[in-house]
Image (tube, rainbow, N blue to C red):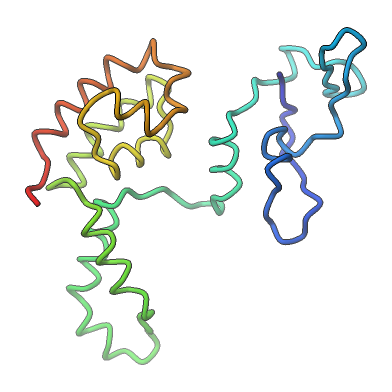
Length: 189
């Protein structure tokens, strides 16, 4: 089906969308059942949606990820977060002397989680290996999941990240290459 280019609006005031609105891009009322069992979608100015003014809808996972992401934010893998938090912890003595800076109590737990979830020796190398997958239909969220999970086989990738199956024909070879490169920089546990 097609989705209008305008951002979805949600009637809930808490900023969360229901699963029904996620599946339809927040436009459940725009669908109507046709007499022949099909569904029609109205896009634009009263006419049926066409390829010229509409784009293919995103998957539920992509849409949910976009709804949950604050503007101007980026996704970090565990290895990237661990490196950033390590740098902050290195400056902790200086930071604790400044009364205007308050380190949250959750800092240590977040740092511990990121360290334990880090499968690799270098976040920079992980990014260099996985970033080219974007050219083959893999989005930022899926790249983070690959880095965080640390899968060893292509079957694990598709089992744990089912959204990648839709572009399997174009991404499988590149993901296999990336997994082989990642295996060379795995941290020993």
